[in-house]
Image 1 (cartoon, rainbow, N blue to C red):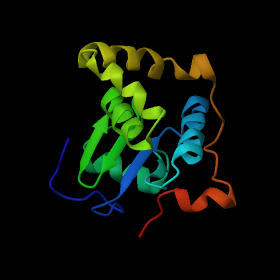
Image 2: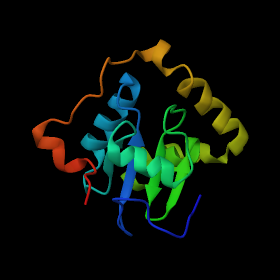
Image 3: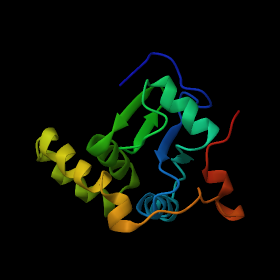
Length: 145
């Protein structure tokens, strides 16, 4: 989705991954990004943060229920399997190799994504609160500009 206008706190070259900050799977995903994003291409942002809420509202997405990871590249946003493949393609090899599964038709990919996303709390658990980044990873997270 593109709005032809930058979301709040996002620059034209920014690549921001919004994730559910209380979801244990989503936190594992953000730790995976921190570990494997060697060129520091991505900024992370919890959907529960003020910055995350503003970005969700910018793209007319619900700000009280989170059913998908959102990847924001400048003024464009990607959801579900499209977001996943956009991110994996930028991480380089060997991670980029999973993009071969993009040949699966989008409705099937998104259906599979939804099965995990909609059951993530029961499958992987949930934190009682949104975890904060450690001091050494704080620069990897989006802050208000």
